[in-house]
Image (cartoon, rainbow, N blue to C red; front, side, top):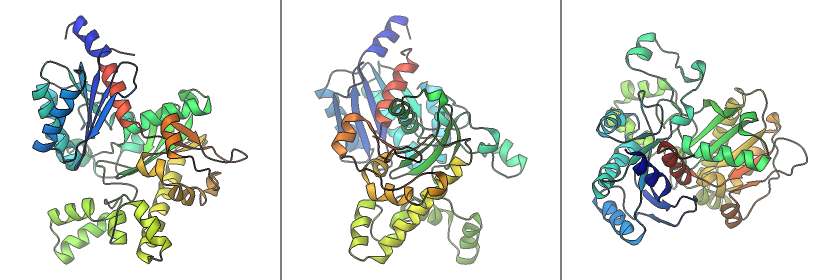
Length: 381
């Protein structure tokens, strides 16, 4: 790319495409970073979503670059990068590490490159934030052959969300990022926690795939591997059955039998639904376990930070997590900011600020971070 073209791409509008297994979020950002338009496609990634993208593009200024959220980079891509034929082939090869996320994202990449062939397309990875995990945090206790030949290791995810939340946390506390030790918690359809020491991820609850770690909306989170062997041997469950159940029918949905949405479960619990109560209790215990395990990788805890759809908009969940974390110096009795205020301000401290560890909520910023990283790849600041 020529220097002139790079400058044009960096300073023009950035189109952000965030594709999930059943959703596509589209947004457009000018150079000042303030979103000028966005849309959630009414259909999952596929022909209908592509038509919606085409309609969106017909209504907004022409983008000078496109940033794509790609959940998994695999072992060979360690930074956000321009998508060319080689990178596209690498991503196809690692799609089975996060098939619910990477496969639909690649459908959107292909469609967008066809619709916008003359602008740079940048892959922004959730795994990059964790690329320098210490050896002891990224290594599974399995034979060397598995680790070397199969490249079996822990990657970590939600990195774009964590990057955004970390910067907002530093602003809120008035401290430099490189002097913070915090636990960040992303709670949404997928859930994870991360330990950050002096600006770097040093531990996280997700591993090789986005299935490990905390209980999630429909995903199981960590499960005794012996249980999976037992289900296969004793009950004859196939790999496909295990895959489908653990990704789509477990987590909060599997526990409650009715919903994977914490808002539904809070209402159902109030009406006496015992299964909803168990789902919420199991979920919040899983979160506390994850937070405590992340704190074990730090020297001190400067703040506990919530983000993600549940993290920013479910005060009952935040309260139940924090009120039972006194062992870490975290306390309940949290303030409940209005969601509109949080979205406008971007972050809010919610502990009583009398004693104990600061607790913050940061409005989810994956989309904005993709725009930031896209410009950075193209030579921006």
